[in-house]
Length: 620
Image (cartoon, rainbow, N blue to C red):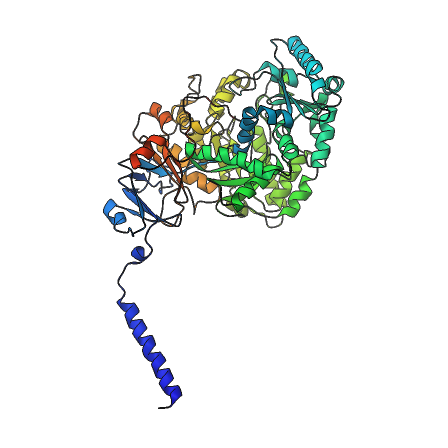
């Protein structure tokens, strides 16, 4: 035998021996890849039944997790049998576990900044001067504004932003005297120019906003565009809410992204403590996006964020050109920070500045605003996005006519744009939100045909009910009509833009149809608690374009879950408001652990401990 033949024979022998040895390996792969964490002695509602029914799907005792993903689910002994020497095991002593809550619409970064200003008065004064004016009549309110500006402006350096806050309705309904004062033009831009010629001034009475000429000039410097075409006669600013949220962020925090990232991180941690593990929002203030990118690059985001792209519409008269160039980026990013589509910041505003088909007195009808009508810059931008095959996730839609106009725009794109078909549109899962005074019954089949997803907030029962005297009591069935929408084949998801302490309490009105005044509104639109939880988990994951990652507890999906203090499925309905997380896990990592539960587990508390007895403000 030659040396070469001997060498080949040796290689073959070694290969045969190794193959034989490999064939003798009988250790299960689950043991070799043992879990990082096993949670057991639990009542785990996986929410893997995504149908419109009262079934939660598979219910198991235990769950094994490895590298942030669910490795297996089953009985206690089955899961514990997978444990390795380094596996962490948590006995939750029979408590209920559900997937983490997915919130389709909440302005976490806006609330973070608002709270930071409140907690840091010196920094607040450096960012912008904030004045308040009060009065029971227009005359008193005008006098209060004049006195405040004359007395306090001399102490404010020239060029600094000034926000003048007027009285608004505490329920967010838009019924306050301050809102009427602005919308009735009891003061105008020329009045403000005389009182504050050297300071950018925004008078704030949501949804009414008024600016002066200095504010227009300041906006030009920040954004490079003239926003004058967004003003109504007298200086009423249709996009005033954007200015209030964005201008300070984009001026004061320019070049300070690390500081802004810390402010946002603090609020993200609070929402994790409230049970939200993923959320969606448009971003007002371009510096906010850089702050999120900072957190992501540092691997410090405690919860997931699917953002809608709003930059092309905010203070931009060339939005159509912007979105023609942008391309389809829906879903782009990773499982912590990704784009869910082009976000229309708002196609109308809040009552009475909404876009409806309802016949009301002329002087009140003139207050209504439809921002995507013919010739409107925002409408041109959204149509450019739709006709370019991009997903549009409307960030604020309140009245029914605005939604009609949006659907008109979609159907126009289908008719005119190359490559845009009904099938491609349906696949994009376009969406609208809020359900303030829509959908009408006749809109539901049309929305279903176009494949539109609907994001609804129970707070609309509070905001819209005071306006039924104007719009008609028969329109009560248009307010958050979840059951009709679901019965009509629409996918409806949960949104909650109040505070992290209200994540579960804001689910209750969907079940009871009672607002905070105790008024029952269209009780026939009530749905059961399991449906509400699907809206807030598996269905909302579809809205976020991440149904293969989040929303239910299934093998291979992200280990995002909550250990609850009470059984959501069996407590009396009125007690659902007192359900809260004892533990929040995101990607297999504990981001919140309540103090008492931590003691029971022999561990240290993690994350902010929320005060559920304290009433927190929301951000519109």
